[in-house]
Length: 353
Image (cartoon, rainbow, N blue to C red; front, side, top):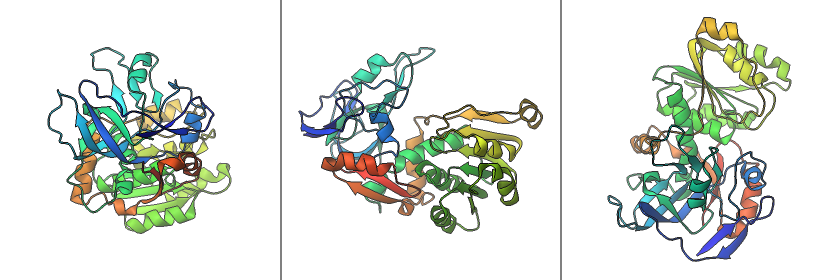
């Protein structure tokens, strides 16, 4: 089979021929039909993330695939079955601080070296192996192609953030960074969860228009002014106080937008950080105390999230037709990584090995 290998950080990936990956206990081998190439993949393979990378290895996080083989101790899955493969792997013990990794991507805890080396090979390949607990059957989903289904990963992350916010039907939410891939996914999931009002905040006017057109009664696109010092006044004119703030901005070092979002939370409102701020955020102790605000982080999602997303899609609450995936073949992997950095909104970069 063919796979794309990163020999050392900062170098282009090389597509080579290797033997198919071997099954391990409680694992499933899948043929990769589609995988999401995240916008910041170039930073990860370039070694610009402060997390361990087990080079040489094949990068790539999630996958839509078909089951090719299962370990002897795996039940409930059939060869040929279509599945969603989640990259979050947690050590199977009851340690106070369990190891956590994103398969084919990065380590997430200081003690994760062994787990990372065990599951380091990712989805930029024709086939890959996952622990069975990372597998969610999706045979029941019809009407969408594999490239659209591969957008499920960010839907799961957005859902995880809204769960952390304890978001309820009929509530309102402000989504910072709504014109990025994760931001648009957050808008779609908030719609599916019954949000009464969604304020989509971002810079790209055309993406905001596309989001507003999905449901003009519930979604209000709010374009940011050019100057950061104008954020607070501009947003206060357009946005009423909200129950939840989902901060899904990319890698930026100016906290002004997040500060503004925090100022628009209702009494006992909740802010969830799921984006990429690279600096500390000033926080008013007194305001947080008096308004009884909740500030939470959300790096991934619970293991039940993919199945919940599948049910939302099956029911029609989540409409994947909004996504506009651009597809690449395995031989175009370096082109796909470069292009992914420019994709915004509902345009997703999808590799189809």
